Structures are given as structure tokens and as C-alpha cells.
Length: 550
Image (cartoon, rainbow, N blue to C red; front, side, top):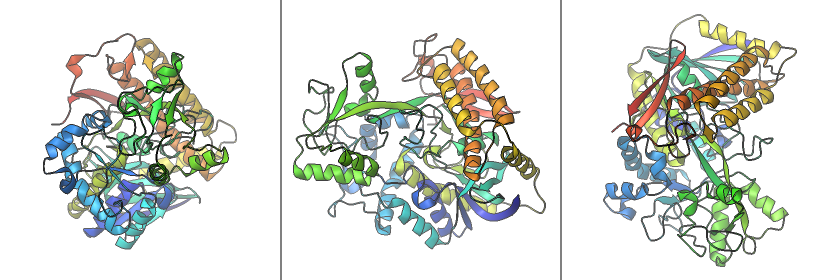
């Protein structure tokens, strides 16, 4: 296997929105920057195919009172999503959001509608509008071009799966070329981790088709797992959320749908709107994403998204939003099947469990490991969060790199030799299990023993089962080509995260939101305003309750 070394000031792991924004800002401040992306930056990450809503605060639109705007946002799904971030992170986010909007607009991402700031979706009728409607279909190509124009080096088809260093500091990373037999050691003064969301930990809505997911198939929590292994702290790894949308066609864009959620008799299942409205959509989806599943389980369903009744202009607005959100495949499918949204309602459903654990960070994107920063879905959420904290992360990483010691010395690191041995083992096994076997086994273990309902008995049994599976993964997993090698490395990271889910779920002795324990069916008021954190100490998970940062 060919090995090589790359030295840089700032290494951005992941070429999504966060990684590209970090690269652009760090280059602007004079740092040498390398972006390592598992896929291709133009079409990778959660923002790969577009978006059409951007959470932001625009004073000229919303008025001068940021506190009032934040208070209104907390009434929507943003309240749950930001509750564990702390007020400093939320305020920093919104204070910088308008700058990102103007920057993107100047680069060629159309942030205005007919020349004006236009807000719709994700908001209750006749209240403050929280999300800017924009045309994000070209956002990844535009940001990729900006990063290249800034002088950043982009290394596509390079999967980083191990960080160098430890709790005392991060000094680089190790990655593989996903096309050629090449192992790369990156030496960096600072690192920004932005590898996105976590999918494939729980079964999807169509379990046999793992790629049927809102997030990219290859977003598997690599950043969280490798940051944990060098001493970074994760938070709330036992919690999950759920999304909702078109049944069996798992896609984002719930706020783009401008119709009413109706039962089989045509009655609205919520109380917020009774007729389609392109300004708001039906907020019952945000208030209660599991309502579709309950209707099905109790025999009252199915529930339909009914956009019939929109004007021609409203229908055109809806279709444009779906295209900007990246729902091209869905629209093509509807056309092939002769489904006209002017005439037909679509069945909606609640989607799979979505892992909520993230890297603990502050408003400066710092982790607990010196020189290691994080942004995007790794630590916050949404396109807006990735843009803001990617920018801040790049700035902080560049500033850190100025005073950091030069990328170290000659000779191969012990970690490189250990990694080379792992890769050789995965590629040389003649018999064994492929990544799909291991991934399906993990998904079913998480669902059966740490899923919607759990107890100490199920968690204990499930953890023991997972550890037996992990032994098989370590000794029998095999890859017959470079694509399978990347999937094998992803599965190893997912098993690390799976074990943390069991450990943290056992520690959380209560039921809260979607986290339900049959042996602790009540919500413990003493745990309100607390975060359950986990980090690696002496090779084992160390769990600790902490206050939400203030």
C-alpha cells in the first residue's frame, strides 16, 4: 500500500457546507487549508442536492429585538432542537446569520425572492416568520468554487477515519483514498471536523434500501467517533428524534409542503390551518412528528398531505420549492406514476429514529481537545448552522494555527502503522462478513434493545449482544474493493457510537420526550436543564451529567 504525508495549517474533514465555509474563512485569514472529502464536494453532505429554508434573523425584516425573535423561535421545533446548545450558541448563530445570507447572495446563491427577503414555512400562522425562503439547488457547486478560488486544496474521494493526537491536542488525521490503494497521513496545526449527520445506525423506512434516507448514505458519524477516540466529549448520544414526510420516499422538505394534513375523511388532523397556505404549511408536522405513526397504529390513518386547492401560482411556488430542496427524484416519480398534486393527496408517515448525539462545543466551535474544532450537523444542525459555525470554525482554526507548533517531524507515526495493519487485514481476508451483514446486525440490535421502548434488562442484553457482534466485526469483516473498504470503516465507527448509545441510555434513568424507559416511565425534574456527556477515559466511556451551558 502506498503511503504519503500531507502537511497543512488547517485540515477540514468533510466537504459539506460547514467544511467549505471553514475552508474559505481560514484561507481568507491566510492559513494553508486542505479539505478532505469522502465523496465529491460539489455533491456531498446534507446540502448536496439543495435546500429552500434558511433560519436567520434579519433586522430590517424582523425588527431590532433579537430576544423577541429567539423567544418566538422556541415555540417551533427549533425549541427542542436548540434546547441543549445553550443561549450563547443560539445568540451567536443568529447574530451572524444575516452576514452569511448576504455573503451567499453575493456569491451567486439566490437568497432573495423577486428581489426581496421572503420568509415562509416553519412558522405558525400570523406570527413571526423564522425561515428565509431561498433557492439552494446550486449551493454546493457555488461553495466549492469559492473554496477553490480562495486557494484551498480540495482532496475528493479521501475518507478520513482516524484523528492523530489525544486529549492534549489534535495534530492531524489519517485517511484512505477511496479509489486507489493509498493511505494518507495528514499533519495539521488545527482540524475542523464536519462530517455531517448519522445515518445507518437505526433501520430506515425501507430497511433493505439503506440509501432511502434524508441524509447522505455515507454520513455515518465518522467525526463523532474519531473525535471521541481522541478525548472529545459527546452529548446526549442516547437521544433520538424523528422526521416526517412522503411515505416510503424518505426526503427532507416538510416545511416546503404547503398543504393540510388530513385524515381519510378529509378532516385536518391539526388545528393550525384548514386550507393550503404557501406561507405556513401545516405546523402539526412540527408540533407532533409522531402523529402519523399513531394514526396508523390506532387504525385511524392513513394521513394525507393535501395540497389541492392551491392557486396556480401557489402550486408553482410549491413545485419550485420542492426542486430547490432537492426532491427531483420524488417529482420524477410522481410524474411517472401520474400523480398530480393539484388533484391527488399524498400519504405521509413518520420516519425512522434519527440519532441526536453530537460533539459538545461552544460558540467558538471549540471542543475539549486543543486544536480540534467542529461545525455543521456534527455539533448543531441545519444549513444555516453549518454556514455560520463553519465560518466561525474556520476563523478559530486559522487563529489557533498561527500560534501552534509546526506540523511534526519525520518518520511514520505508530498510529499509521496500526492503521495500515487494519486496512491490510480488511482487504486480505478471503472469508468473512461484508459490511452489510455487520450494518444490518447493528441496526436490529439498536432497534430491538435500545429503540422506542427500553429498560435496564433490554439495555444490558443488547449491550452484551453488540459486544459479541463487535468481536466478529474486528475479526471477520472483509472488503473486496475500495468502495467496500470505506463502508467497512464506516461500520466500525457506527459500532463505536452504538456502544455509547447503550451506555448512555442505561445512565438516563427517566423518560423524556421520545426517550422512553418502561422501568422509569416518569420524567425526572432534577434532570431538567442537564446534559448527559460521555468521553473516553482509559479506553472506556466516562459518563457525566452537566448543566446546559448558559
